[in-house]
Length: 131
Image 1 (tube, helix red, strand yellow):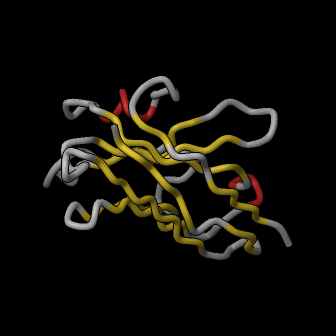
Image 2: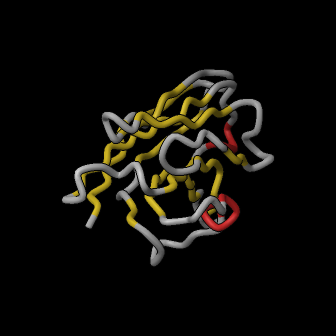
């Protein structure tokens, strides 16, 4: 069992910056064995994977084209924290953002396509980009 809590959402103007964090707690002592991902769901749209990072000390990452070059995913295994830094935000980035811990055996494509019945998910945090 892994508990997941997102934080850091809010409202920002186009071109602005936000930093989302996700904390994990588990009876295993650490969530470092899980791959992790960030997902978002805009109103009337399907949930999409936007960023993923490999487990342990592997630093392999994957990004959706829509956020590549603007968003950065990182993890701190010592603190069991996942971060998403979002630069140059656009109105189309407005969505509820979710993070998840997923067993992936190095397959980040699997993480990016994961659904809520796979792994452990937080309840989401709202990001609104508007002038």
